[in-house]
Length: 462
Image (tube, rainbow, N blue to C red; front, side, top):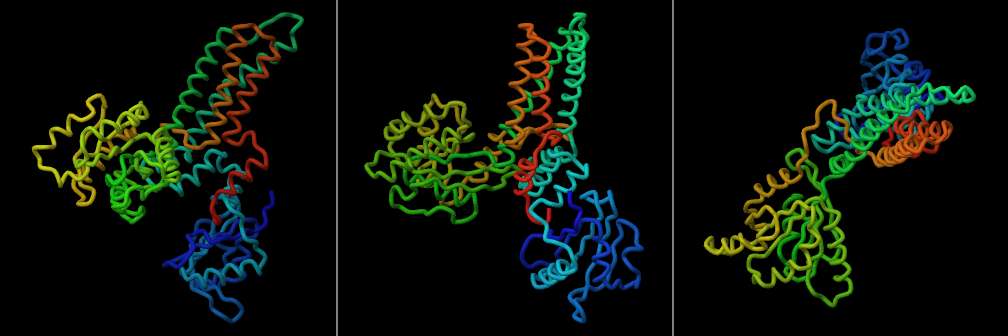
């Protein structure tokens, strides 16, 4: 891999109090030393790693900024190679001038994710840990932060390495048997191999099953807001998001397409989905919107079913005939909206509505923001995100999930092969295939195409 000096602005674009420009590669310190005048008068190349130096950077006779320069020597840096970070004032003009100056001096602009890719290449961490860096940057909740931290610290990688090592020991013994096939000797106990495959199948299956929770933590728990037209769905969405995301109107059928956005409530990220109101209509566009509503119900983990308390009970029960079959295995919260328009003594009649539906029930007024705090409490309760300890491994990455499923298929073939007594070479091939897919996750098995695809999704400067 090239060790040429790369540079990039590592702080978010735009104006701020400070900005950080990062360089990495052999010669980074010398390059910055040629532009930097330390207040101490000392050269950077004579200074030790992990030290910070105050001074100025000038372009010819023009002073660009007073900066802090931090040095990282050799393997003691994030990338595993010589690195420098320049902390300057956050003016976009200063940032741009410093970048132009560095490039003129021989550095080149870093590609997306190139710093992390160099760290992976230099053995600072494996591929699953590298991907966790991006997840940590993108984390928006306590749960997503903890999951990313656990993965970045190597919990997932250690678990996979242990599984691969166990398989490697057995496949080595099986392949040794091939060298002594004429003597009909057995180095690998089929009984112990059967126990091992059962153990590994259970481990891989547990990891694969965790993806459902992991995906919800990473992308947000999908919550569909459903009901008839004009029951207050868009008003509630705007209230939960604290912005005017959806158009609110007294005209029926205003929302014709799905509107989605995420928000953090109680440390949990929810992805709210405002849907088209469900009713009988001859409008072709509105009908398409209603069809999408039913699809979103199927995709949601939590369903907020809003009911207008001014609607006749019979009309609600008629609508329920089309909705109830879609709510199997869903967490449902019945929201009786416009409760401010109904006397308290009439609420009891709504509390017994749809008795067959196992759901939390809450009287609210989205317009007047009544009981919306209790709704947030119910949402966090329905999300049921378990406490994630430092040793817990939760799969959040679709690439990892696909590889785990492939590894699961391979280990099940090994189990079947042991039971049917297939030849040693086929058994060895299936074990190695399982090892391949486990190694694919951590980067022990990788291609430039896979690496390019992964790191291209990183931000510039990371």
